[in-house]
Image (tube, rainbow, N blue to C red; front, side, top):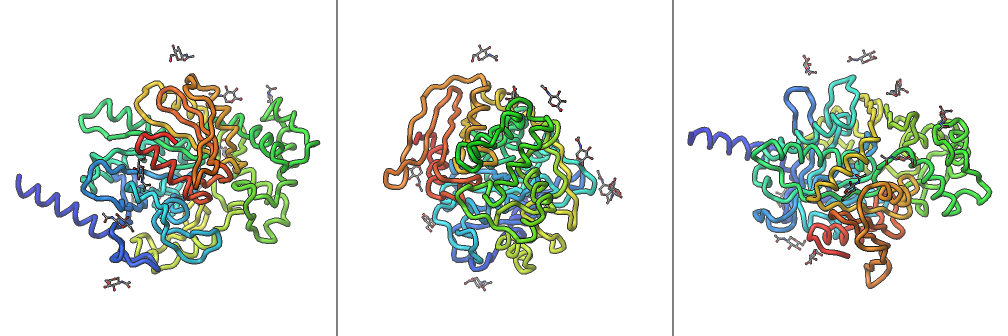
Length: 451
Ligand SMILES: *[C@@H]1O[C@H](CO)[C@@H](O)[C@H](O)[C@H]1NC(C)=O
Ligand SMILES: *[C@@H]1O[C@H](CO)[C@@H](O)[C@H](O)[C@H]1NC(C)=O
Ligand SMILES: *[C@@H]1O[C@H](CO)[C@@H](O)[C@H](O)[C@H]1NC(C)=O
Ligand SMILES: *[C@@H]1O[C@H](CO)[C@@H](O)[C@H](O)[C@H]1NC(C)=O
Ligand SMILES: *[C@@H]1O[C@H](CO)[C@@H](O)[C@H](O)[C@H]1NC(C)=O
Ligand SMILES: *[C@@H]1O[C@H](CO)[C@@H](O)[C@H](O)[C@H]1NC(C)=O
Ligand SMILES: *[C@@H]1O[C@H](CO)[C@@H](O)[C@H](O)[C@H]1NC(C)=O
Ligand SMILES: *[C@@H]1O[C@H](CO)[C@@H](O)[C@H](O)[C@H]1NC(C)=O
Ligand SMILES: *[C@@H]1O[C@H](CO)[C@@H](O)[C@H](O)[C@H]1NC(C)=O
């Protein structure tokens, strides 16, 4: 008995020791008062292994009240290293075209432990068996298994309150994972201490997303007032609507869809090939036939987004060694064909149903936040979905203030611990565009405080 116990402890410390990161240039971890771990967590029976980065909080690590936050970027097919190195981690590319990492004063690890997961396993440095077609249910099942794997390697964090956070297609990943956790907790003795979730510019209902995008673009004078979108308002799957979208993308092609007042980074040839540009936009605006997301690879790149700094960093073999990842994998922000293929077919009508179920349980805090300068998942689209949910408003729209009493945006409260908030001037990646406000909303929500 005693021997088994000792062996287990040695095993645990072994994984934590192996995965501990010593250096993330230009930061020597021995100068920091928290640790970072990076490596793989595996699901043994199906050949998948998931790259994770675990960032300890800057708070006391023995305090089980410090929240643990699982972060998932979207896509599907985009990597949570975006969250780690651009948005909420302790070292980030502070400005879009910075070439080296800087210390992030507004890192979410000031108040929480952060677990970044490259999921599903076709993404980033994770390993997947070839010819898997990922879907929403399987991804949620796998994410649950990986959380359990994490707890078995890092058992000292099992009691901490768990929060799920992320953005964009994370709007599908997160509620589905929360539902799996709830079902798991209902069956098991050992429960996962899930407290809530925070979703930024998340997808909810793909049927009205294309219409919301067009309305948003018109309201913001990105399309001329004469631009006619009634064909889409009538029938979003019609050929007429498809033509309207194509015309819209031709007009808006130098506007960064993720941050409409931001800069559009592009390569000249990319812009010249109009058909290619339209295909790229179609994929990233999540416009798909039959209202399902059907993504193969993002071989055409991410429209208007600066990706060189993070891709150069993560593909440097020295960095790969510091992170204990497979050196043979070329890392892309969003999956490309290079060394693995990626196929994902979603089942989005399910998101609204699961959100409703989670609300009906009335045990999880749910924060939906939207940068109001994003045209990919515009705030009006999230609002439209909220209006469809069976949940009453408890607090009407009101402004909130940040940064010396400047207007942060507007918020509305609902029954069953749901809150919606807009972030003024931020795009799709809210914590990257407005670090101060994002940290404030995050910390207030963790503490069940209002803003
Ligand atoms: C990091 O700092 C430690 C302690 O000062 C030192 O021994 C180590 O060589 C440094 N690592 C690098 C890669 O500079
Ligand atoms: C896992 O990989 C092994 C060796 O490549 C293969 O024999 C096995 O069929 C794979 N299992 C699954 C479930 O894909
Ligand atoms: C770690 O350092 C930060 C400042 O960089 C400080 O705010 C925090 O209190 C420190 N944490 C501990 C546990 O000493
Ligand atoms: C994957 O599927 C493609 C097309 O169905 C096939 O050509 C290829 O051989 C498969 N690869 C593996 C490793 O099974
Ligand atoms: C999704 O949006 C469409 C179009 O507005 C609407 O008809 C449908 O009821 C919505 N689905 C759900 C589950 O709310
Ligand atoms: C919308 O257009 C599609 C494609 O033309 C068609 O199959 C479908 O029946 C139309 N839906 C409605 C409600 O008219
Ligand atoms: C997804 O897209 C691929 C390629 O465009 C197509 O072959 C496949 O049938 C689609 N799957 C679904 C379920 O629509
Ligand atoms: C909406 O919620 C109320 C109580 O919260 C419930 O009585 C009612 O049946 C629900 N309606 C639907 C359509 O689910
Ligand atoms: C986080 O919020 C709590 C409660 O509002 C507050 O006491 C604390 O100072 C905040 N932490 C930071 C780092 O702002």
